Image (cartoon, rainbow, N blue to C red):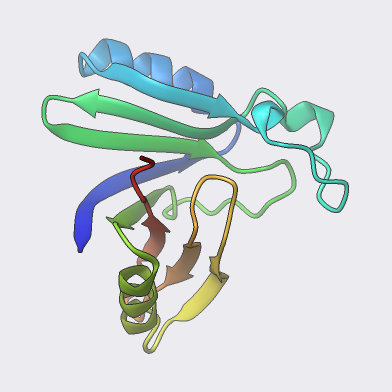
Length: 142
């Protein structure tokens, strides 16, 4: 089952500033904010020192809507016009696979669906219309 679809803003190093700005401008409540420096260390993918304070993921609540924000890593391509992604969250891996496969028809995969430390199945793609999508599985822990 799809749990929701939300806007996901991708910024180029000023994510912390954006979180504070939208908190102020939109009366948003910051529900979570995690930086790249808080990511579990992986020797195969070291996080550069200049990225440690960048936003990996922030979730802001604005009325009944979620707004999510992250920064790119230093050196990653950043294109004006690609700052807004759409995030689809499902409650099981099979549904995430189904949605991902359908959205990628005629488009291209940026990051294949894979297990991450925050999701059993997460991936990114651009659909045939040039829209950037993030597909994530959220499973309630009991």
